[in-house]
Length: 351
Ligand SMILES: [Zn+2]
Image 1 (cartoon, rainbow, N blue to C red):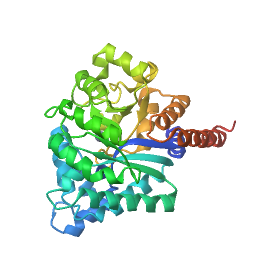
Image 2: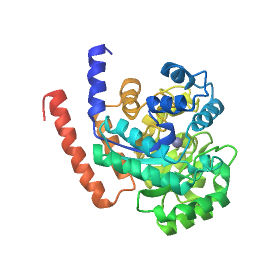
Image 3: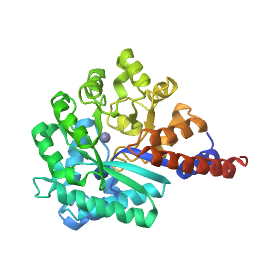
Image 4: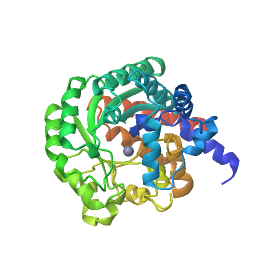
């Protein structure tokens, strides 16, 4: 692929209208903002320049990634930091023409520091509203109940945060260590959350196999699956995902960087897309994995041979798979349709 074409493609993808459904606020803090947070504390001699930080964000394996994730969280000092984090994360997405975001956040990670779930949620809501005013980017929050903390604490968190439902908070998710903490014990909590009006998703089939996906679909009743990479291990599961059009929140670079997939080429996203599964493209923890939502689309073209019409379909899938109302989905789809048309005229000189 020559550089000229590659640059044009990059530009095209950057300008494509997009939605992002699987992004962790704390894993998306722009590197400049994170560097600022680290320098503010003044007690991290290994990070003198921004490049020191970039080098730190490379991992040997999944465990190493988790260690760096925890290290990074130590630089978040108070609830107010989350206002700026939400704002800067959404600003970065808006620069890539992302129109709508559903973002995870994990307030349980800051409990020991004395930061409250409610305080964090309120600050994130303030930050996302400021981003909407300044950039017009819409977003909703999904609270990660963190499977490692157990369903009792999850229930407590759900109770604390139910008052924010519909006021910036839209759903629950389940991140954390899949291999050590299976999702089964969360079934009752998910049913309760559904009763209250929360929308449901859970990470599954990222590190663990097809059984883990069955659990979240059948027992937790999720509407979407976070990752779902290893669904291919069970053809019956693949058929079910296809039949029910259960969206998969796929994050290719994350899976490659954590070693879940050995290479981009080995990732099953193309197979799933071609088989008619509801695939969406997402960036998970873009700062932590040195990626971006644009980069995620770019590698699909460069490494997996996706076409422009595949990209369009994927961008529309993200609207269908979102937790927006039916009217909002229709409105956003016609906005995307218009932008796609303009984009094709601009880059390909035809309508
Ligand atoms: Zn994730």
